Structures are given as structure tokens and as C-alpha cells.
Length: 357
Length: 115
Image 1 (tube, each protein chain N blue to C red):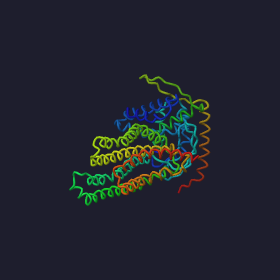
Image 2: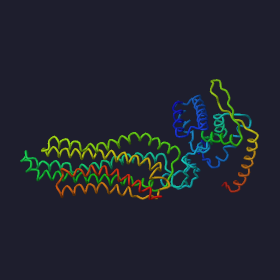
Image 3: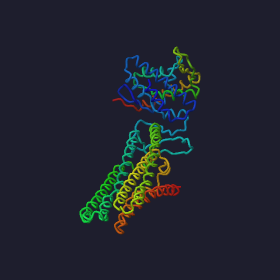
Image 4: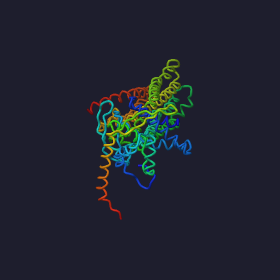
């Protein structure tokens, strides 16, 4: 019986606590309890009884409509539902915020939504990893290139100009190739969900509640990831500064610290990207902010810029470093790029919505 | 629509007659939520199992239209149960719906071929 109570609680969590709603909840619980007791009396096991009661419960949409709740009601007029492709005209009620919308587009099932959220999570991890690899690609090159500068290791400086540099370069290209591979792979996988960003769709009441729940739960992690990411980016300069101050002549150690800086920035950016991508996922499903229902014909500016931004930064960094040979100071590009990315996203977000009006 | 029988009931059609079904079960006396649900299942030979939410929505609607009235009965274990009884309005509405069904049935029959 507890399972049933919990089930009902969850269903009603998203509804406003009006007297009518509370009365409905009480009565429904009473009906479910009677049914449960009778099933048990007939000899059904606990699991069977609970299963039957829950499966014969129904859904909240017609209830929400009947109770006059200004919820996003998607009255299902037929039993046939087609996810990702079916078209159906529906009648809709005003949202609580007073916005009105005309519900068209295709229906997204609970399964599809769950799948999307999971894929989005993986996408965040993968893209972040790709960017991390781009950022860290020159690490070996920096370290090996630095060996030649150190006066103490004359023998090594002879070696460094040949094989070590090749190894460093090889490592760099390997990482970049792998990163691009990841970008392409992830991009292709997420392709099938593109329609969620560009087409109008609707969720049923339960799915929407569930997604909101997930979004709420994620808020804590989101904040942590974002803050941690930014902190890491900022703190990444600490090792270099400290070592430069304490041991100004140990260029080798400084270069190792630069490598550490790249690593820290990479991880920081990974966290920021992960947080951003997952958050976007929820916004897409709930059609909020830039994915708002009414604004589906939006400019793809943000996405285009993001996909160009990091490779361009990598090019600038590598180009500048190779040409001027100042690997010791070109690392600053990454720190600036990391922080600038946040600004760019913010600007584009603002511009985008202004443009759409 | 879930059924225990061989075929599928049209959910559109049955939705139009949920009210009628409930009022029928109240004709001979008041009843409460689960009892009505159980009797629907019995009388339809398990061909129609009404969902709790559908049932409650119907109760709310019928009460708003004045077709039924609700009151609390006292139970032995102290838990109060909501009982529903049909009103005069309800009986009138029920008769109308019965006539409507007869007419509908008559019309649709003309287009049904049984080979």
C-alpha cells in the first residue's frame, strides 16, 4: 500500500495545492485502497495487487482538465501515439504564467524524453573530453621542447631536437585527431534529436513533471560543476606564477607548470561544458528560454559559433606558438579563451532572443 | 482501451457514455468510488475496466452539473468514505442519454454489415 501512496504522491507533486486537488487526491487514494484490499482478499500477492492498482489508475491529464488547473494539458483524443514524427492537432489550455499556446507538432513519449536526457548527458561528457584533448594536445611538445632549454641536461638537449619533438608532435596530432573523432561521433549520435530543437513538440503531463523533477535535481550539480570549472580555470595559473616567482631560472619546471595549467584549464572547461550541455538538454525538452515553443524558428548562431570557437582557438594557439616559439607565454590564450567563451555565450544568448522578437 | 474480451472498445465512444454508465449504477441507490468501478467491470464482463482518474473526473463533472450529490458516510474503522447519489437532474440527464444512445445505435446499425 505504501508503494501506491508514494506513486500517488509523485503524481500529485507537480499540481498546485488547491482544495479541489487535495480532495481529488484523497478520494483517489481511497478508491485505490479499496481496490487493493479487495485484490488482496481475492488472494493476489502484494506485488500483483499493487501492480494491478497502479496499471489501472490512469493518467492525470483528464483529471487536471476537470479540476480546472492551468496546467499544460495535452488531452489525448485517441489511443494512438507516435513519438518523433506523428502529427496531431490538439487543443490546449493557457499555461499558469498566462502564456497561450497553440499546441501542434509531434508527441514525445516518456521513453523518448528519458532517452534524450541520457544521450545529452553522455554528449556533455564526450564533447568536454574532446575539448580537454584539444587543450592538452601540446603538453608533451611543451615539455620536450623545454628540455632543450635547460642548461643542465646537455645530452638531452641533443636528443630533444629530434625524436622527442617528433613524439611531442605525434602526441599532439593524435589527441587532436581523437578529439575531432569524438566531436564527429557525438554530433552524429545527437543528430536524431535535432528536431527537438527546431520543431514544435509537446509532452504529456507526467513526462513534463518528470523532466522538471530531473531538472531540479540537477540544479545542485549544475552549480557545482560550473563553479568548479571556473575556479579551475582561474587557479590554473597559480602553479606557473608560484614557480616563476620562486624559481625563475628553472624553465623546465615552469614548462611543467604550463602543462599543468593546460590540464587544469582543460578539466575546468570540461566541467563547464558538461554542466552547460546537460542544462541545455532540460531546457530543450521543456521548451524554455531559447528553446521556447514560440521561438522555434531561432537562429543557429550560438551553435555555429560554439562549434567553430574551440578549433579556432586551438589554431590560434598553435599558430602563435609555432611562429613565435613562445610556448612559455602562449598558454595565456587558453585562460583567456575559457573565460571569453562564457562571455560569448552570454552575448549570443542575449542577441539571439532580441533578434527573434 | 484495455479489455478482458476479444476486441477493443472505442475510447471516444465510451468516453461519451461514462456519465451514463455511472448514473445507471446510482439509479437504485447511492454508492461509492470503488464499488462503482467494480460493478462496471462486472457488468461489462471485464470488457471495460474504467480508470480511477476517469472515474473521479466523471464524478467531479457530474457533481458540477448537479446530476449527482456527494456525502460522507461513516465507516467502522473511522475512515470516511465519499458516497454519491443521483439527483432528479441526474435522472433526467440519464434518460436523455439513453434516448441519445438508442438513436445513435439505430443510425450506426444501418451502416454495419454482418457477413
